[in-house]
Image (cartoon, rainbow, N blue to C red; front, side, top):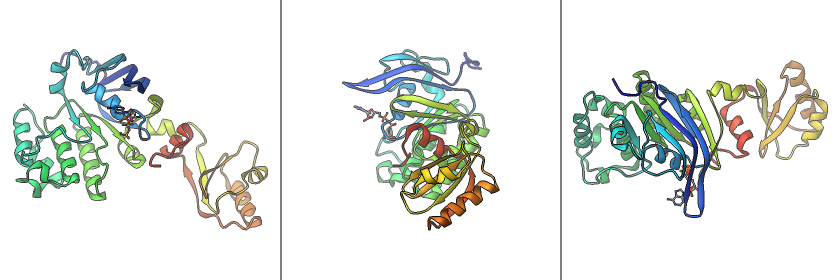
Length: 311
Ligand code: ATP
């Protein structure tokens, strides 16, 4: 058994990290319990990679406290490294090494590895066996980096943008593998730009922006924060929402999320639906894609940051 069975997987408090005059992370808090998948979600430049690299021991915090599996990644890195897996956004692999050799070699260094054959099969790496790393395609390098990060069956694995640039089939294969690893008891922390990835995989979501944590919780908790249901439709951009709101019950909200995409929050019932469609009819608007939906992480993100994730 390990020394700190009760320690959370990750506990970051008040992390500050500067690059010269630029402060990339401004007092960020992050708590990850053992087990499950935590998605760290944020727009470009939010500080995701910096935070993860501090947790991995690749960067020293300027301020704040960082504990990973109860250990300080800077001063106790030697004890921590064998217990965590790391998938960087790029690099970290000897360019001349052959894919399969590298994976089998890494597996052989661990007492209870995940089977390299299983990883090769799950991640569709069969054709890469004898190819040197540098000759693999970007997507193949990425899948191999994922396999390398998890083959030692670490207690905790950090995946930085694991599916960025992958085709849909490879993305789904990656998601399936992450689900299997979670079921096997591995704690997974991943950064992502993709809302659907967080919705598909995450037990916990941490939204960061401008180097700070701005929300955290299960996807359900985050989505329940506001109105339960929303009504969405698309129409021509720039509709007069003040006039539409006049026709709706007082506690309703209306927003143009992106040009021509509208969302109404409030008590969404048949009467409200009828009011909206009749307002549209009076104003010559065809409400396309009219739908009553639950709030999504995308809505929450947009409300909190004012940004679209992939903008
Ligand atoms: P992305 O999704 O684009 O990777 P991110 O959320 O991972 O973004 P970081 O890579 O942590 O964000 O970057 C946070 C801020 O720090 C950004 O403004 C970035 O330009 C800056 N930054 C990151 N690395 C360095 C560095 N080595 N030197 C100087 N500035 C850096």
